Image 1 (cartoon, rainbow, N blue to C red):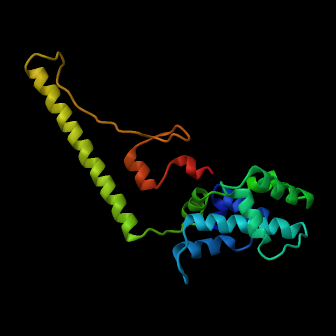
Image 2: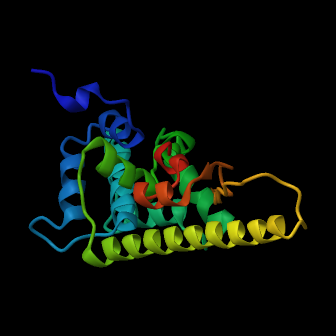
Image 3: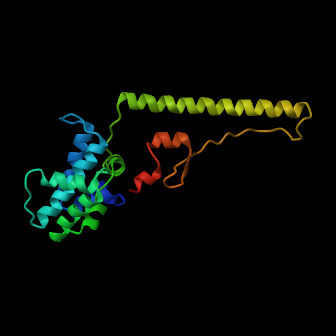
Length: 206
C-alpha cells in the first residue's frame, strides 16, 4: 500500500528531517501544534525548536561535546537580530572549527511559515481556534459586503451620468476587482482566496 505522504511533492521541513535523521520529529511538531496531550505551542516556538534540533544533530554528528546551555547560546548567536556581527562570527567560527559548514546549516533552518506549510499541507494537520475562525469569517464577510457596495455605488453613478447624457456609453456591467499585493514576492492575490488559504503562496515555497 502506498503511503499518501510518498505521493506528495517534497517539502523543505521534510527534507531537513531526513537529512539530519530526525526520525519522528514531524509527528512531535504536529502534537505540539495541535496541543495533543500538552499545552499548544505557537508556530514560531516550533520553528525555533526545530532549528535547535537541527543544530544539535549537526553537532552530535560532528562529535562535538557541548556544555550545558552552550547549544542554546550558539543558536541564539546565529539567529537573533540583536546579536553583534562579532559575536555571530565567533559562533560561526566555532562551528567551522568542528568542520560544520555554518552556511549550509543556516540554510537548513526554517521559518514559522515553513513549519505551518509543512503541518497543514504535508501532514494534513489542522488547528484553528474559534477566535481565529470567527475573525477570518468576519473579514471575508466585510470584504464581500464592501465589494458589493462598491459595485452598486459605481453602477448607480455611471447609470445616472448615462441617463442624463453626461456619459456616452451603452448599458453597463460593473466588476470591482480588489487585489492584495505581497510586497515580498510581488504576487497579486484575491483577498478572499488569500484569507481562506491562510497566507501568500510564497510562504508555501520557503
